Image (cartoon, rainbow, N blue to C red):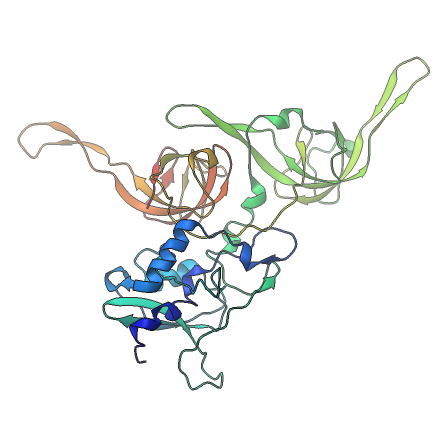
Length: 393
């Protein structure tokens, strides 16, 4: 494919690959691409690259000349084909700011072509084979696309890895569940409840009809300072209010308390007496764009989600940094393994030394609370444990 003149550089990058945002994970109505959370810094990067392109030194060693997007591809996977650091998608993204205000979503079947001109590299979309075109790259007209949750576009990472945790991993700033409605009894004194079973509960159930069921919260403490960061509530399932409770006065002046009745709709973990209820929140569309923190960021892993002591690739960890610290959804972070302490005997005498910390993994932040965040381990060499540290990549 022949190189275009340098003055057309901005048009080359108008329809670049790696500007796509993570497909919407939440339930709700349709959203437009005009609401994608593109930051000012990312726009500035795009504008700069639209004029200059990316140095060839930033490309992956085996970057292909082209790639046809397939069903099952993710933004992260495709980024790895072209860039040394997959999260650095703005390095290859540019756009014509006069005609389009947000990047295009990327869809299976689109052909991505790597163009190298004067020591710089750019991506552009090409006409798919068999489309009736002569095969040359084409300028795509910008269009506003309105779509639902599943509009066919590729996501930044595999959605199935984090989607369950958007309900599972819940952190409260205070121990508010201690005062939340609670299950007080079960039919025939059953110990465990399953889908379709009835449960009887007391408390204020006037806020909603649909409820999430949680086990009593457990505190999340900073690994170093032991400061309380929040309360993690293990998610158990959902229940629907089918009959409200009531209090009936008796002739002797006392009252008869009749608890509310709920039907268990789904079960993720065992549900029983004492478990707490919280209204199912209204979910809105959230789109994620992989990006590095704008400022230096460092912290530690608070815990491994679940019962494991160590975590590996595709597992979830809680971090001791949240929105108050500048953490954002989509942040990409580097994982570090602490260098071990040992005794150096090579010089004829015993001296205690500490080996350097080594970077050995990548985190993708997908849920952020005030003081705590949850992240997916994208890649890692060795087991991850509570207390391990992270920084900006």
